[in-house]
Amino acid sequence: MQPGGPNMQQILQQAQKMQQQLAEAQQELAEAEVTGTAGGGLVTAVVSGGGELKSLNIDPKAVDPDDVETLSDLVVAAVRDANRAAQELAAQKMGPLASGMGGMDDLGGLGKLFG
Image (cartoon, rainbow, N blue to C red; front, side):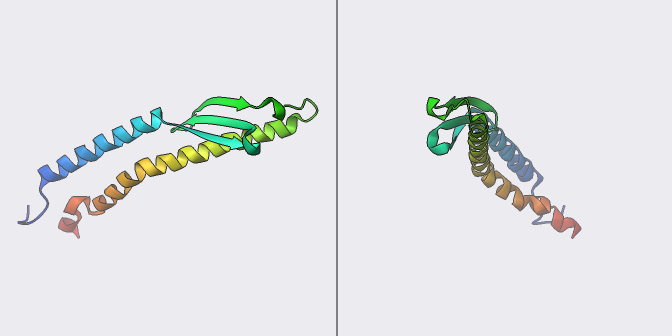
């Protein structure tokens, strides 16, 4: 190893720290719930941070037996809205970790050994 080059122990510690932070962020996402709505709140969907549909609430005012298609559209819109919120939450939680990995482009300095 070249003098002033990367310290392998430091690189391993940094990788372990990032792995722990990633696991914590994934756990937080799994436990988080976000809400999406449609029709001015007539339909509300709750999904986990991972995008799993947890609950769906339909206001009785949205139920028209002669217009089931509109209700179906509202349900789809609410679930999409909730999934969008879950994706934003995931980006918020995972974004700092991804940018931290950006510094790993050169593998913590190892790339300099080959470049």
